[in-house]
Image (tube, rainbow, N blue to C red; front, side, top):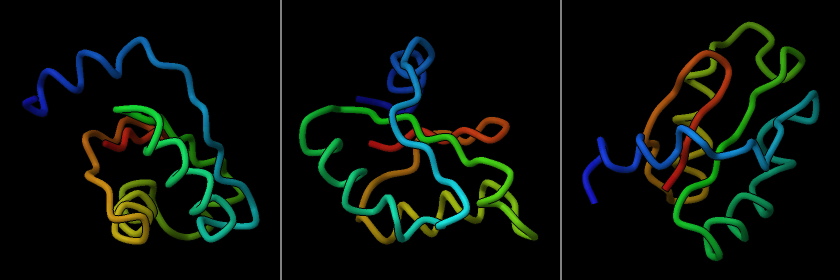
Amino acid sequence: MTDQELRKQAHDLDVTVWVGKAGIDAVVDELADQLDDRTLVKVKFLRSARGGTDTAELADELAATVDADLIETRGNTAVFH
């Protein structure tokens, strides 16, 4: 599937992973498990997780950690494939 098709599918997805003050390390296993079961997973980065960084940086780091593709970052939400 192309990135554009994946973005269309992601539009109606609900957020299933929230990154909070514990940071991305706390959700790595959960995200990896969900990616094994689903094509796309939507992740929300709460204000306490962002600190001084932006959502795109955190999403890139999380994608590299779980070996996933970052499809889209919009606002404080990212979609992984």
